[in-house]
Image (cartoon, rainbow, N blue to C red):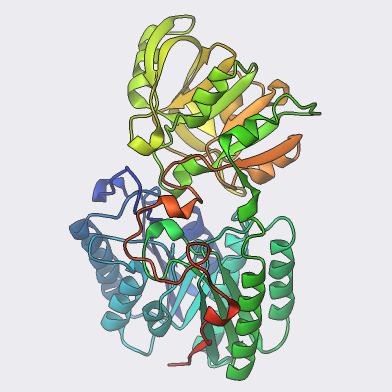
Length: 482
C-alpha cells in the first residue's frame, strides 16, 4: 500500500480587492499537515507530496492555477503508482475560467491515474460542492466545526475510509443534496451544535461512514456556492438518501438561526455604555481577511471615533504604507496618517489625522487557528487616536486570539471594547473572558447582506435573496462505487 498526500488550497472571494497570483501560494497549510499526520499514523507507506496554499482573496490568474494543478498531477504520476491519493483542498477555490477548481483538480488526477486508484478529498465546510468532484473522487469528507477545530479528526476519518475502501472492506456510496440557502452556522452552540452532534452519533452506526454538513461560501459567486449535505454509507443507498434528506431539511429549518446574530455597526456600539463584567468583543465580520477582504475597512473605526468612545482597541489593520510611516517615526512619535480604506470602496474612507505611536514589535507572532502554532507576522505596531488603539501590520490575517493585542502592549482583559477583524475563528479564544460577543455586519466584501453583492453566477432561487420553501430542496443524488 502506498498513499500520496497533497494539497491545493484557496478560499476564493469573487468580490475581494486582493489579487491572487502564483507568487501568493506558499507551501504550508494546517489541514494538509493534519492529513499527512493521519496518513503517517496509519502505518502505510506515505509520499508527502506538494501543497500550495494562498490566503483567501480574488480568483487565481488562469495560467497560474493551471501551473499549480499540472505540477500536482505531474508529481503524482512521476512518484506513482499509488493505491490511495489523498488531497487537502478547500472546496471554494475559483480561478479565471475555472468555477470549480476542486472538481477540475480531481478530474485531472483521475484522468492521469485511472479508475483503479482510490481518491479521497478533505474539504473545509465553507465549500461549493459540485457533482464533478463527487463523481471523480471515491470519498469526500468535509469538516463539521466552525471554528474549524476538527481537521485532525476528519483527516483520520478520511485516511481510515480510503484504506478500508482500497482493501475491499467497505463499499462507499454517497447521497448529495444541495440546499438553496446562503447562510452561516456557528457550531459551538445550539441549534447548529445539535445537528453536528447528531451527525457524529450516526457515524457510529454500522452503515453510516461519514456525514458532511456543508455551510457553503456565498462570496465565491459560483452556481454551487450554497449549503449542502453529503452522507456516505457502506453499501446502503437507501440509508444514505434517507439521512441526507433528513439533514438537509433540518439545516433548512435553522437557516436563519445564526445569520440573525449579525447586527449593524450602530446596534453593536449602542451596547458599549452598558455595564460589562469583561471586555465587549465585536467581530468586524464584514471585513474578515479570512474570507478574502482587504482587512483595512474603517466603517467601525469612524463610528467609534465619532462617538468619542474610550479604551477601545481594534486589530488587525493591513496597511503597509501606514505601518512604514509608523516605523519610520518610532515609538512616542506623532505621525500623520491616512489609515485604512485603501483596498476598495467597500472599505470606507481613510481615517486621516495625527496618531501617536505606542508600540512597535518587529518580531511579532499572533495566534493561529485553534490547534496550530502561532503565526510569525513580522512587524506589528500600535497607534493611538483619541481613546482608540489600532493594531497595524503588513501581514493580512484574521484575528484568531488575543495575542495580537498583547504583542503590542495592549492588555485585552482591561480594554473595554475589542474589535477584531474576524468572523468566527476568534470565538473560542475570546469567549473565556469576554462579557459579550457581538457579530457586526459592516458593508465590506464579506457582508452577509447578500443583496448588496453584485452576484453574476449564483443559482436561483436562493434564500434569503428569493422566496424559497422546503419544496425547493432537490431530491438526493446518489453517487456509487467505481
